[in-house]
Image 1 (tube, rainbow, N blue to C red):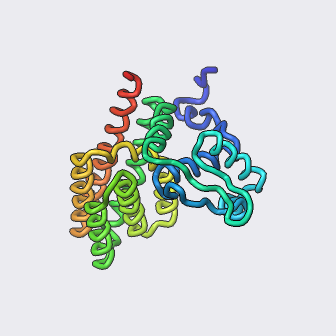
Image 2 (spheres, one colour; image 1 turned 45 degrees about the horizontal axis):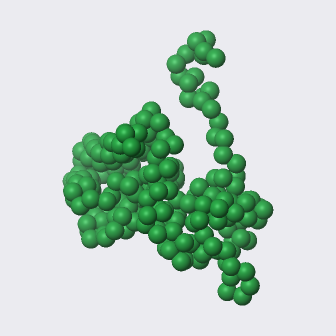
Image 3 (cartoon, one colour; image 1 turned 45 degrees about the vertical axis):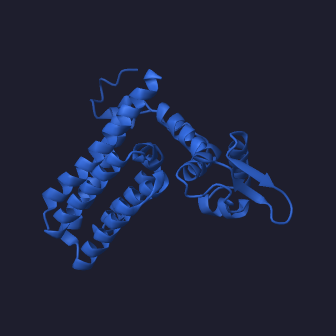
Length: 248
């Protein structure tokens, strides 16, 4: 149905609603955690009651989500003393998970995600440049050092996410901080694919230091531009990977 009477701004309001059930959303969150290595191979997930409390859902919803993970071969569930749900995902499985997630997104959706990511990261960096203390700058520098020394796909991805979240914390905006944390949870799995080669990692570290340098000299416009450039590079890499999936 055309929305000609409402104007072009109505497109976002009348976009399709999220179609995933609560159990599917929980399963996706847990799958992302496994793919990112936040719960390592052979690691034990929290119990059903604890997971229900964490996600704010019923234990029946958790059981349904765990059943979906078992069917995908991502966890084993053991009964009795010492039992529970244990992760059984190695790097090959994690890569397949992320590629499947990326294949679900259209190029338009990736660009839209990149625009959102850029808006949040750029605004956070600009405010951080205006509000950072010397201690904040030292903390951000240490986070960049951690990113440079991080090893492996998961380690590099987690360090990069920490940098974005620390910049948002330095901006001293609760709403921006929450938006950044939510955004990292959404894009983190996808960006896991983009941290494999050393050249990409070096570019990421260099751009991280450019943001911190602008914050240190209280250059709000420079900090915003550097942060937006980081996101643009990440978005471009994801689009290239998405196009490569189409070719294969």
